[in-house]
Image 1: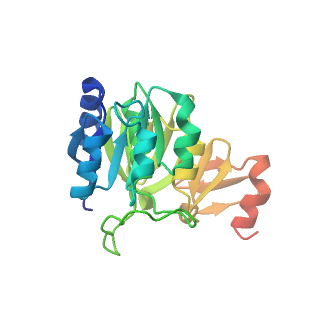
Image 2: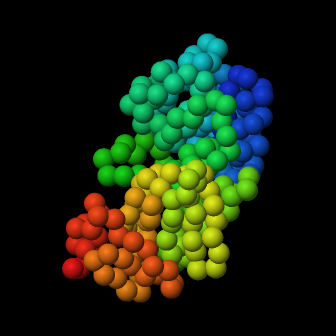
Length: 239
């Protein structure tokens, strides 16, 4: 896929440097400009194609939120701020995510993956969409595994298991541990093929080899169906 063109709007050099490093580590992002204030960012947005803005809020001359309001055609925006109290206003302005400083790479990756999701029905389409991948492109996401971004194709996933402080994504070839909550992945990969069958398990429906009212079997692994999920799972599986 064509990398999404990003700019950083940040007046703290160290914070901008960290974001630039994270963008460089993410294969589907490319950094085109770093701006020390919103005035400079306005010039860039008006004169260059921009898909994503990583935007601080506490900026000189013009705040990040006021900057968003000036945009006639809004690229996707990920706020990067040390202040949580502006989150509600930020989401009211349809930002993609709101990152609190200091930003860890795994949290950055979660926000970046949201950029790959299509706009949901009713969401304003204020900016041109990035080039669409070919029709036969396999859907994927990047996950942080041991401080690296690892591409995992959705059709390779068998099931996802919740661990104590992470999740394990089991694929047809190997398993990957990454610092997500299972509910976050359930929302991220919202599709008919992934089904929450237990508080600790999210499974790929097309990988289920057999099932009963109490469990499913995938690749030789027996996975329990939780009591609170049973009725919905049986309905989804046609029972």
